[in-house]
Length: 262
Image (cartoon, rainbow, N blue to C red; front, side, top):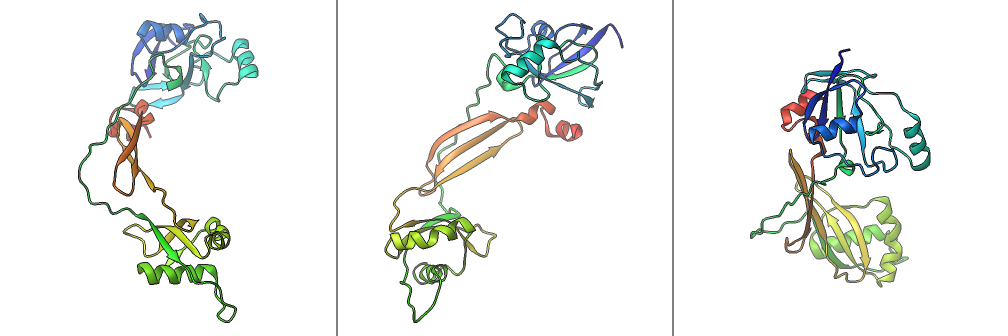
């Protein structure tokens, strides 16, 4: 082990060589890594939490030994016993560099939180959602013609909407009987069937006529960011959007680097 060790921070990719015994927080500050700390390195605020990585990192060309970071110390033990510390996490102000090291800075430890803005473009589309609402009037049970509620619901869907076959999970079956009776044998059913399915699946059921909305979540899974858009399935209107950085970016900015890491 040399006097100076290579330290690489992810997801920023910043790296540098430091003397053995240098606190991880000190190395991060010298490299301009976005690592938070407000207690002056006393191990009180816990904002400098990091996750050291061990093993082979072919992307960075480095092998990290298990002893590349100092052992757990009394300050960290005290903090964990009082406030808790996730497995694999260390306090950057307490853990020191003992060899070549790869250190991940989790989002909650970054001073300048990454803000992802992903907007959905508005354009005219033909709506063909896999989940739809159907209002039906189900015939009442007749002791002279024994039949189950699900069977008579299927008959009503076939008669009114030409739905050939249905399937219902156990939670829906449990609420089917009280729902039909509460609605005086009328109900609104949410059915899901994508283009590959042969059977409609009951997602939920409401007594009588349900005039609420159905929502769908459109997810854009990109190599850099992940975006989600909440949509009204009636007209395709995007109601709200949110995004995060793809957490895999710490293993490489391109897909081939991530495959190589695995």
